[in-house]
Length: 163
Ligand SMILES: Cc1cc2nc3c(=O)[nH]c(=O)nc-3n(C[C@H](O)[C@H](O)[C@H](O)COP(=O)(O)O)c2cc1C
Image (cartoon, rainbow, N blue to C red):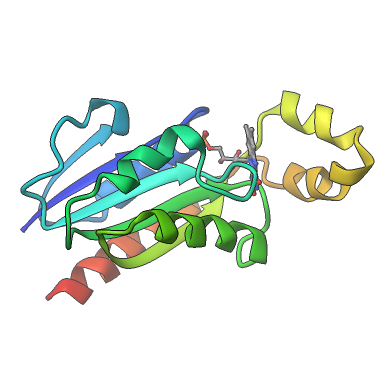
């Protein structure tokens, strides 16, 4: 069995989670940023990660999902500033699912990721974004060791589902 772990990451959070997922796999595996993926054929499972932006998959990360081969077993992962388990990060997975018209999506995993200071400073000044910016401020230090351990478990659970 062969796995590809690939990701789009702007500030390194999703890359860290990708590495943990990769480390959690005990099968034949590859890891690379999505920009370096030339061929998506020949993988039994593709793990694909992105940062949540505007409660969605970032535009630059969408194309890969749309191009997944027909029937491709896929698992999504993301990092986000919002609290884990909330409705907003879930919306981004729903967005990913709606883009994955061909793929066979087996699951998804999300954890918090530190939000860059410039964005928080800009949003905290805007009344309509203040509450979110305050919530997202507490993502500082994430993904942490617990998030990464959970990511590893997620990887193993997806493989178990395939057997
Ligand atoms: C332009 C922009 C928009 C964002 N929008 C959201 C959002 O809607 N919800 C959320 O939870 N986090 C949001 N974030 C925070 C990122 O999802 C979070 O910091 C993520 O861990 C970044 O991952 P990366 O380092 O892999 O790029 C946003 C960040 C940026 C830069």
